[in-house]
Amino acid sequence: MKYIAIFAVVVVVGVFANLVHESKMLTYLSSDPKACINCHTMITHFETWQHSSHRNRATCVDCHLPRDSFVNKMLAKARDGYNHSVAMTFKTYGPNLRVSKDAARRIQDNCISCHREVVSQMLINSALYEKVADSTVQMGRRCWECHRGLPHGTMRNLSATQNNFTVKIF
Image (cartoon, rainbow, N blue to C red; front, side, top):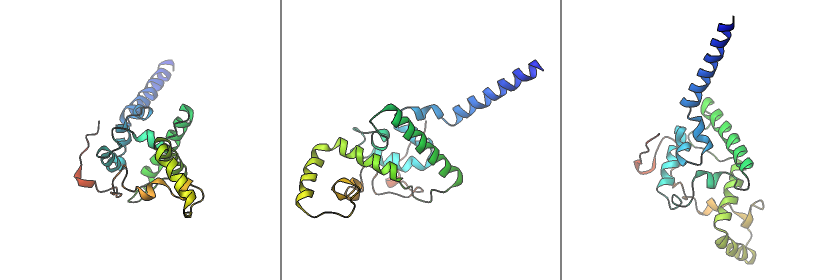
């Protein structure tokens, strides 16, 4: 009975190790943008970002995750990862990915954080001129309402890749 128990534990550990290896689970702990393309639906977003002006200045985690603390970053990463895996498993994402309200807030905060000098002038200007409808966002608009093509271009369909870029998945 002792050998059967040891064998069962070894099998469970082996299956778990294989799951970690095959899913490239440990890459999700990094800030490497290639970790985002473990999931095939992100290839278009990765490739368009690679050809954008943000490529040399900001990675996926710089824009999409909170930067206030490591704990908040990991919690957001886990929450988003869970939501992505559920959407992938049950095919509920449709032809285009949509950002959640929480992710939209994080992206907006990070845009403002990186571009605070420009945004400060825009805040001054917005106070002088018309108010825009969305009172939940500074200046009444989200950054990507005007800057729609940054950093992912205008391609939004998961089955197409802008300009037929190619990515080598690691």
